Amino acid sequence: MTRSRMVVFASMLVVGVGVVAAVGALYLDPARAAVGPLEAEGLALPADSKFVMGLDVKRFVASPFYARFANDRGQARPDAFAEIEEKLGLNPERDLDRVVIAGREAVGTKKEAGLAIVTGRFDRYKLGRAAEERPGVTTKNHQGTPMYLYNEGARGALAISFLDDDTLVLGSQRSVEAVIDNRSSGAGGLRANAKLLALIEGVKPGSTFWVVGDQSLLSRMPSTIPGGAGGSGVQLPSLRSMVVTGDLDPVVALQITGETVDAASAQNLADIVRGLVAMASLQAQQKPELQQLASAVSVTTQAERVLVNARFPYELLDSLHPKRRGVADAAPAGQ
Amino acid sequence: MTPSAPLAATPPTGDVRPALPLGRGARAVFDLALDGMVWSRRSLAMAVLLALPVVLAIVFRIVLQSDLRVRITPADFYGAVVTFYYLRFALPVAALFYATSLIADEVDGKTLTFLITRPVRRSAILLGKFAAYVVTTLALALPAAVITFFLLATANGWSGIGGRVADLFRDAGVMALALVAYGALFTRFGVVLRRPVIPGLLFIFVWELLANLPGYMPRVTLTAWLRSLVRHRPPQEGLSEVFGQILPAALSLQVLAGATIAFLGLSLWIFSRREYVIEQ
Image (tube, rainbow over all chains, first blue to last red; front, top):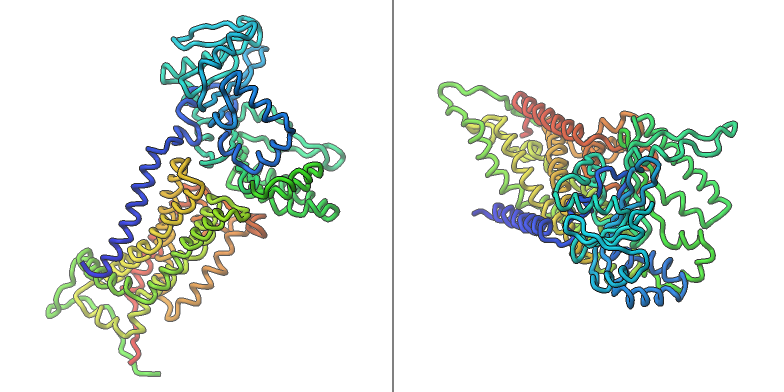
């Protein structure tokens, strides 16, 4: 083998090791997602979900955001957590891993409550006891899975159920039963909602939080914003879908992707967002603390999509909230 | 002006050995060219250029571990490295310096005569050299990208890396495509121009800025199509922030494949017919 071939071979070896490590991580990583950031349990969410949002609790708790904006909520918080831990055997900061929330279509005139799937480590005995001791709570088996029902039969009955030792689902009785059905049958669920699933697949991996919503949710958003010539307001192009992903470390970073009906609407919407950013820039001349705000947001278009990328340093957020300044100064930098 | 000897492509006659088949000829040229390309000063410089992100990633990790305040996440930093450093700068520059020299070096070194008087088709010469260029640059760029990815993706631990590896495969594919597409373009520069480096640099650093303009202007650049294929969208400022466009991925692949075939085909056609004048 010539020296040049040795070099090529060595470099391909490095690439090969990298590929093997990457494929290994893809299959062995315990945090491996089933679809995008959504774990396999999340696929049991009802197919008629209008939106799905997720929160990586571990990342959230470890973020400077949590340190700055949650810790300064008062000294009572640790006591509250201690009480929860004593009663339920659950320390949310320590024991929760991920929370996925879905919103469903209303049935008739009934307003459907959200549905949450929580993964983490639970003391099932303590949680079960705490639920049973609560007045108005009954138990029921649905497809062999025990459920705790609050106000069973009444309007707005709530249900909690353990899908397994590490997964808890809570929401309306109808929604929780739907999740149990989907999980036990291995079919239906979000797999049947190709549109929403495609949006979830596009979520940036490793995000601290994310939200995806389809047209059924976004059609209820306001179609105008106040202002404009003659006080008629500015007409907002309608959105077909929206994906929001965010990180909180080392800055608050948001990526928003909105899909409009056509490229012209996307350009229109992008121009509106840029206009709002420009207005913030004008404000910055009077308020120095807003100077970073204008440069923190960038807007691009991709055919019928609008991509908004925003990055807010914590100093900027502190400056927008003067009361927190003192607290933030006391918080360790970057923590 | 020094006397010159025109070298024209002449079809083999009865007293000349018939040319090797295209594949065998290209393979023979590839073997010869690979040795010359991998062990060269150019490769040393390009290796440093392409491996620089590895050093930056190590520095980034050290900075993180020192708990100094950094305003970018490791994932965002990796995205910026791929989008701004590799796709916008290092890979086009590497392609420029290798691909323009495929034929120009032979002309400058007055060795083209020896090549084209062998029983090998001119198209096989160019294809063999182009293949050697692709292998050499991939051998320099991909390991650096893989190491950079793992250094940055694991900066906060191995948790969640499973969700990111798809980006690595995608980025590696786009980087390979960038080398092939820019390589085909600069090969064409090399077979047409006597001094192709300056026009090549102008193309990379001036023409490619059209990617940041509104309307259809970005579509006449390679970088706009390439950046549309990666998922990273680092925040930008200036014109690119105002008019930044991301083109459809499927169309990007078609355009880049078409451009590569067109540029390479044109290069083969020109090289097969052109008379090169070697200064004595």
